[in-house]
Structure formats: C-alpha cells, structure tokens
Amino acid sequence: MGHVLALRIATTLSHSQMNPWLPLLAAALPFLATAEDPPVMEKPGEHHAHLKAMAGTWDGKAKFHIAPGQTMEGSGVEIARLQPGGFWLISDFNGKFGDMDFHGHAVLGYEAHKKQYTGTWVDSFASVMMVYKGHCEKDGKVNVMNGTAYDPMKQREVSFKQVTEIVDANTKTLKMFAVEGEKETLFMETVYKRRAANPAPKTKAGKSAPKP
Image (cartoon, rainbow, N blue to C red; front, side, top):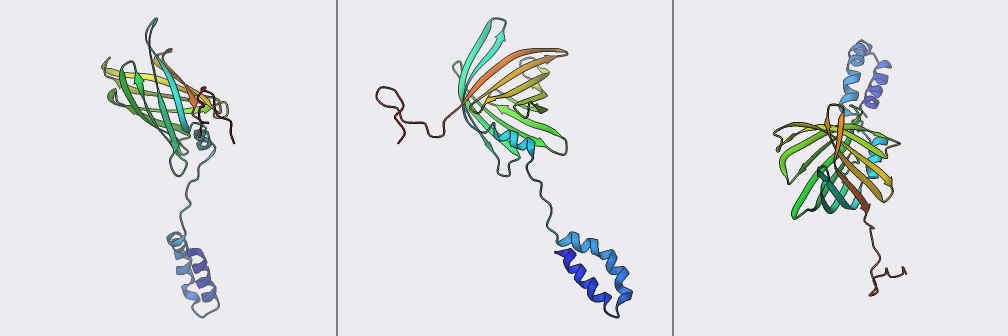
C-alpha cells in the first residue's frame, strides 16, 4: 500500500506548482513502500513436503547392537506431527528397552537459506542434546543426517550417522551408525509401521469387523 500512496502523491505534485519537492519525494519513495508493505513470508518448499511423509503415529520395533552377537530389543510408539506452518516435524517417542522406560523428542526441518536439513534429539537416557544436519536422497525417500554428541559412557564427543528411509506409505526404517573415521558401525535399527487412523474393531473371533 505504501508504494501506491507514494505514487498518488507524486502524480499530484507533478501536476502542481510544487515540482521543486519532487527530488525529495523520489528519495523518500523506497522508505514509504518499505514502511507499509506487508513482509513476504517464507512458504514451505519441496523439502518440507518430504517431512510430511514422516508424520503420523507409528509403532516401532527397535534393536540395539550392544556388542558383537549381543543385542537388546525394544518397542514403542512415535507420534510425529508437522508444526503449524509446515516447516518442522516434531516427534515424540515413548517405549521400553528391556525393563527400562524410554522417552525421546526430536525436531527435524529444512533450513532453506542453508540448503540443508537440521535436527535435534533429546531423550530420557542422558542429559545430552544430539544436533545433526544432512540431506535427502531418492526424491526425499531417504534422509541422511550426520552429527556429533557427547557420549557419557565414553566421556568424549562421538560422531554418528542417521539414515531414515520411507519404504512405502506405511513403513519407514531408522538406522544409526557410529562413525570412526571412514568406518561406520550399525548400533541401532528400528522398523516403523504406520498405525491406522481408525482401525476396524475386532470381533470375538479376533477378526476385523466388516466396514459398513
């Protein structure tokens, strides 16, 4: 609206005897336009659309590779939702590993000005925030993130790699690797199955009731 108002003033002055003021008005036009024009807000792009495929309620089965030939299994539910605006995927995981309750919270998004995905992870097992960045592959079906975090057990910074793959509309996998130089060692993998929004009720025989 500012540039419209300024244009009207300039037009009026150009047809009047106040022409000596025109240079001053010309200098002020950009400021008038900037002061009143609404800001151009960023809109979600292609990479933010990839995040939408990860949203939903997921039942997960995880496996930790503690040592060669030794694993610990766990399960839980992840609820992932896009923040209003569509820029950030916010996920909460609640489950059990062995006899221990486990709770995790993640934020994942795409920072357009950096041309990269950025994410964070915190959980109930340590007072450590994992921060990572990365990219997507295969038309957004594979998300690869790399980062560093302090390992309370090793008492030092460690590097890791996280790979999330959208297998199909109702299946995704998550793999975590410890990175030591050129070597990558798988230490955790999870298979997620999307939970139906409105599952059909079970009959006494254990079968799903027919839909009306």
